[in-house]
Length: 101
Picture 1 (cartoon, rainbow, N blue to C red):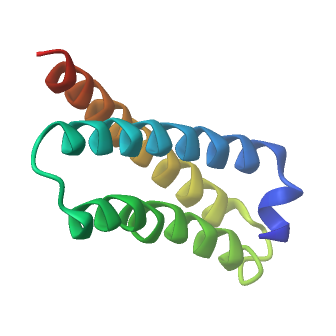
Picture 2 (tube, rainbow, N blue to C red; picture 1 turned 60 degrees about the vertical axis):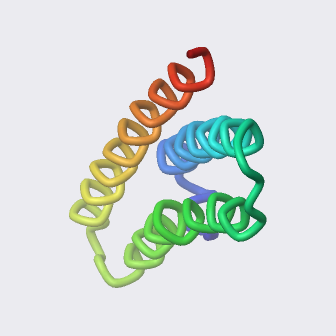
């Protein structure tokens, strides 16, 4: 985590991903509360994005220790972060449409 904190671009991308995923989770929970409330589903909605989206970015940050040039890992980190952010943005738009309809 220290590597990500000392690299401003990596930290910015992590914040963008966190905000988009957080908004998506909020809208998913609101949609879930409109229907039948299932505590197990809400717990899954809260924990799955951390395990499937944020944790891999943190692992990629740790892999920078193994790459002396940091170029390969930086490219991989930013491509993964952009892909996660785009997927979260598409999901957010879908959740907003579902909430408004």
